[in-house]
Length: 359
Figure (spheres, rainbow, N blue to C red):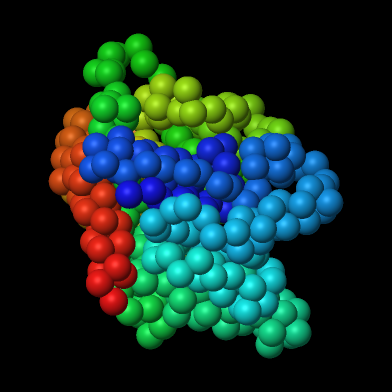
């Protein structure tokens, strides 16, 4: 079976690697051939991460290339679509995915529908607010990263599966055993935009807690625009150094505001920390409250006082860090690993294609 992976971005995007690329070995083992056709390539995303202006002509060319491909009777057996076919175009454009008559699996791991139904522009809300309804109704199945996303899909799509964003346990190894001389660190990993939105406002609190414990703060992927602080180490993100950077963390954090957009997040950074045997502290928003078992593999913290106390407890108690880190690793092994989900996703895709052919 030949599967076309129509992702929004190239492999530089975390969601492309997590939701599509890492399943390649399992799909190939099941006899599938994969064709990757991102809408926006790594050149575009690299400029975006570097805070450079968007190349609108480049975007237009990429849209035209996708339209041509979708209308060319592509030689594939299934289309695996990431996010949407044509961001910010009306819902009617999404129907081009069905021109070939091939089965479609719609995969999304963010509340992308809120780009439209909660847009600040009234006209955007009116004309694009329900565009994802078309995408979902046109799909044979929807693969959703969490229950919040699945609840949105169910009224429109005949088959909805909750598939968490997972990690490869062969890559995400447990942090080496710490020694007495190892530095204490509060760690975070993500993109410049999420750092600016969720972490930067907490820097006074984090710096105060770190200073009290003689610790430092590590921010991986925060970007050049992140505000400097004497206790803050800003590390560049790369796929090659991702795990080794997490291994430098004593605790991993995921602060969020309780907004509709945040409720759609899939808690991936928590899963990354926990896979490395690191205890976590997170805001109890959306799927975070499912991933983090309060007092078992980490803490859920809502108020500033709760954040300060959770950080204090973990930084001052190495045995607690070890116990919670081990519990987190165990949970990832059972529920959030590629080793568990790889064969299941392959089977689901094959089942969708089989069911479509029998219609």
